[in-house]
Image 1 (cartoon, one colour):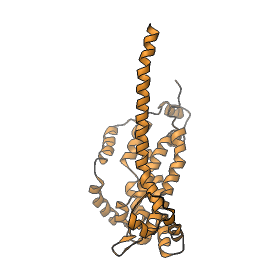
Image 2 (tube, rainbow, N blue to C red; image 1 turned 90 degrees about the vertical axis):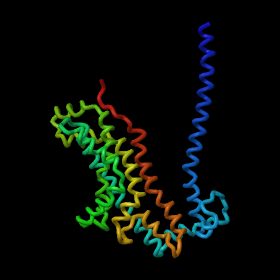
Image 3 (cartoon, rainbow, N blue to C red; image 1 turned 90 degrees about the horizontal axis):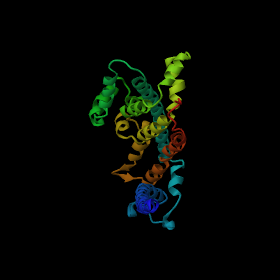
Image 4 (cartoon, rainbow, N blue to C red; image 1 turned 60 degrees about the vertical axis):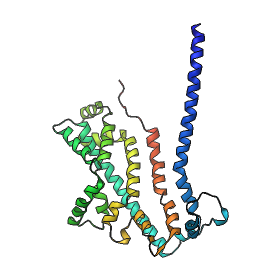
Length: 293
């Protein structure tokens, strides 16, 4: 009797699980469609003439008769617009790579000091870090701009990179991640005669690869797509980043949609490549513990 009751009770649970799975699948399929739609529409628009884009907008109809490779031929050709585009592209690559590398290094060591050592004012210093996350960038923008003028970093890569290399959110992420790491590794390394710097770089840093991967992607996306701060700091067109440069193609006197759409699609590649590189460490490297009890 008890066995029959268990079988009867399991059937409604199985049905409810299946229904929930169907609704969850449908929800995520819809969510993926909403995310993919603008990318797919932009990709189709990059194969159409600028006049077709003005007339129809970002349509997803596959009209092969209006599709052409002229936009990409023009983008990769030898003309003034393509030269400026790849100059902006190079600037964005340099700023993004330097910004991500410096941000990860600086924030890692700050978070390491806040999570691995016990000292006075430790919690207060961490509170100050968190407090900066509550201040909108628009409030800090003017003081930082004046500071860049005083130290003569206007219209330089350093002026774009330096104010953002110590991000509070990145420090917070690293600290929360490292708090779950085994502290026994530090004691064992000290017994073996390893220096504090060696412990941070040779022992703890490799364990935090998943955190580096996740924050590397987020920092790269933020730096690559940033427009407000670079727009304030960079003055000459030869120093513009890709978002600023593409924005200059839209003027009251004419809009070069051919380069704009094709260039925007080609500009997605670096972030896509960075994600492919780092996803290995996110998926396969999520091993936090290194000490067996």
